[in-house]
Image (cartoon, rainbow over the protein chains, first blue to last red):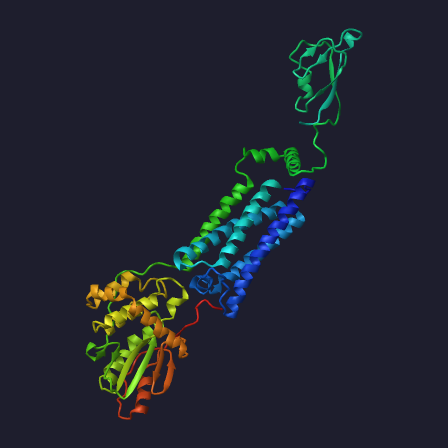
Length: 149
Length: 354
């Protein structure tokens, strides 16, 4: 617990807090885009790597009747909120909660990536980019936990 | 290197006599006058009072002050290395920190959280897998409850080519509403209108459902292609009846290669010839082409029925179709009562699309 963090801790928290916040916001932006195109009934822009439209319109893009992108958006917004809260307050429980959620997220994106590769047999670059933000956020949170202990 | 602590050793009984200097190894060194010495912080005063060298009677060790030295880190870290060193020092000085870091009282918080969140993540994956249940369908197939008389078959059509009314059935073998239509309406129409020579039923492919998942193995297309290959052996309609009788969840393996082969065996096909037809790929291409034509004609739901200039969407009952036929051909017989309940049609739009 760092209720009164030392100056070096505050420096580390500032750098990591910004990084975690940026990653979470980036993930939210990606999920928001996928959700927006789904609501609009349009396929996402795939660029040179085809397949994102197949993934985005597959039955695996829905859980409990709601788009997976909606869950992703909500998840990333929660992570962004926690990252911001930790950045400003330095409360260690917030950082540990962020880390725990990030671990959960790694499992979720891992499963969805598995579906893409082995079941749907198509790669969605947007989904991979989202997965990268979640994994990077997990790693960043782990480093922050260690360095601000 | 930590900040040194200045100590002095005073020996009243030796005043005016030769003083000694305590070395860093704790021994008294001869010939030196100063009584103040610098020791590392790690050298505790209690240790300094009991040097391993000769005892100094009455010697007193007093901690005077902490003084900076050239080896003391700057109070304002400049480089990353200095900053991290300062962070480590701050953490080491924090009460209780060493116990947690050493792990002597169990796993660290990050380990516990990783384990707990990992277990929750595994549970999440299992739940997702169950919600999106992919249990493959059994390889065995069940015979249909009702079958269309094979003597009425003409390839993928039923009835005389010169029948006054033609019913076009645009369907997908994975479509549940198509299954209801095939199980209830079509056999009734076959027995009544087709057998009377008034109606001809033509099967058309609108294989949309497999496209939703975007897999290389499209169950809708494969099933329709298998049926076309069965038509080459004039067994389209038995194959058709078996497929609808063995539907399962969409794109969940009901029409896997293994199950299609089981259907081909069940309906008495020459399986090697049927397989060769499938492998040639022409039937598959024909299914895709007809599906494209369906879209071009505005057909985006299955089943879509076209009869006597009318278009019906969904599993219309035999009575409804018989009424249309009677309107076109007044001498047509009425249909036998059908227990059909009309489910909603399947649409070409992805099921998950909001």
